[in-house]
Length: 120
Image 1 (tube, one colour):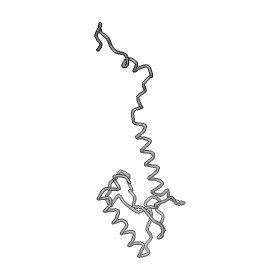
Image 2: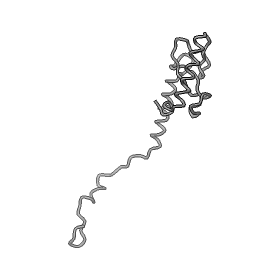
Image 3: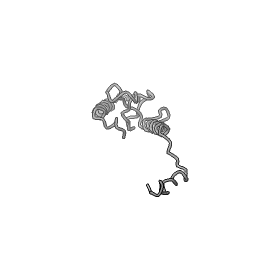
Image 4: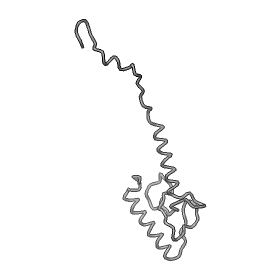
């Protein structure tokens, strides 16, 4: 779980969205996925997703979405995994390459340095 999903404001607002969905489902009102615009089956579990991944935890940025991939929707878990993998690849590519040390470059450290008859 990412830090934005542990944010107290997100947790509070996600509970509000879930309660709104529960009320609609009990009333027989169709709940639509914000990603694809198609209905979420009443028996199907759903996620509370971010309309804009960088938009913050406000109520205006949260909406119900398909949890898993359907015939018409990529689903939150599949899309979130894809986005997370892309972010990790990008972070790895920005890291400095590991330093390479040739085997002979450290030999000077093992030999005592002498100046005249004194060891340094």
